[in-house]
Image 1: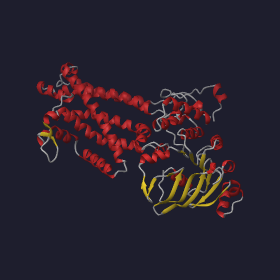
Image 2 (image 1 turned 30 degrees about the vertical axis):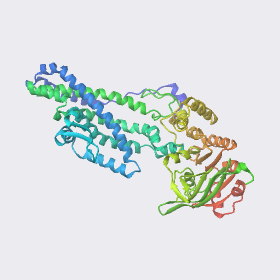
Image 3 (image 1 turned 120 degrees about the horizontal axis):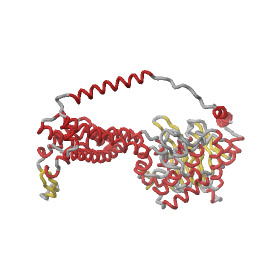
Length: 302
Length: 258
């Protein structure tokens, strides 16, 4: 081991290893990207004033807000549903297992676009939603489907139900990643199965669940653009409507693309917060006695 | 029995446990009196840990009966017919049985203090202030009051195991089960944990301890049971079993561990 006295006498002074190829690579990359951007901006076919004009257009901004809102609602609903499905799939009850497995297979096995169109066209299959008491003529509820489920509601349902199927497998993987001894210790203290899941297993599973769920959220934000097919006025739909009038398709794609990129970049921050929140007690170098910023380690061995 | 302080706390009657065709417990019968410390010795695979886990129904048994206090563990008996218990009732039975694991199994996302208060607050419904006060007293008892706000990853193995003991004691159990509590510890950390267990034994806790610490058995145990191949080979006072074993298998085992 290092001799502390010797270390105190003189710190190591050495010339850093040079990496000439890194510099070369960086310059080459800059040139290639620069050339591409230049050719894009100098293209006569693209009218840059249109891009600038629509970048902060109120309709575009409203579309972006709706996109964020749809993403948030769908992810929250999907996460709750996914947790339920994951617990069901791991349950001892065979009926619950079959329901969860069937659900996941069905919603993963058909295209999202198809599901969105299905929910959007629900009114064609069932023009009215009727709730009545069987074997009597009592009708509790009778409304045209299009009144009950707007195209926005159809979009939310489609995205939530589809996402729940993927997220369920992520949550299940998270639960399985928690050591079985944890549930045994909880049981031995008299905790019920549901309490153990809520207070002991899921908080630990979160560490494994959050990174892929960040991925899913990014994917969801982009999938909302598919709602264009059922005319939900989110970012892509709005951009598309504008360009169908002024015929500046590429310009409005650039506008929409810019906002998708901005929103996804911002999404990284809450993810980092959550990762730190649920990483408590799991820090690398667990002997550090005080919680410190990433990169610095303080405290010593116990 | 004349001595009422020694009325059986645990009664195991002809307990059998199979995994498929592999029978790991082949009819275990033993009693543990109130306030008694019973040490289970035996080679690995002898079924001693499995037996311990049957007592709080972490494993279900295939035949026989286990009683803790007056409760039949895991089942309800009515008119000579056994009925499986509802998980809620099994959980209630487990509250009076504390268990300490070889791998500690502390909850890594909770501090030492939260590990100790989680079950009293969430399961027993004790107010937080009162639970915290009691937890601090228990942490003090195991010598770790200054580590209350540390996460398990910031504690040594020995410290983690002492927190685990405090956690089990927080539910005020009438019986404590120890499943090789010092086997995963560095040798220099074993002493502190054994000290806490000795203190607990002196305070009159009924304990069943699976261990390879012969010294602990000699000093603390009222009864030593030697198991091998799923049966009780020999049992009795420590002096009798450890110093004057009658069975060849006991002799061979003691020779190998001493």
